[in-house]
Image (tube, rainbow, N blue to C red; front, side, top):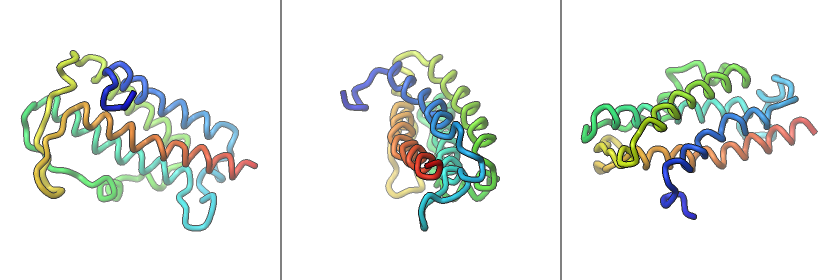
Length: 163
């Protein structure tokens, strides 16, 4: 089944799976190795997680805004710009993962409380080209589809560095 056809409870399951997968990938890997790039020019596991947190901040906030103010106009924020306002890149993997997991639990609580029609609530997003209509579902899918390859990237990096 394509992601855009999945019912909300499956999207919630996919979002909920990210923190445990990240924890499993890092289990037994020394913190110093999680901060080391697996190859020249690649991001370390800690850097990838910092990026995921930045995206989760920005897109999670968009979800919260859409739910609180359906039909609002919101300005797009680039996660790459947002991360510069945080200490995420300096954090070790485990504390960053704990913060990511707590943030994800808060988002999941919000999404679990939504009635099925709540996933269709929308806002107009400006500031990244032409204005776009984006729904809660759109942002949830964006998180899921963005996180998948990055989680695999962390899993590969952890395997490479611990072997």
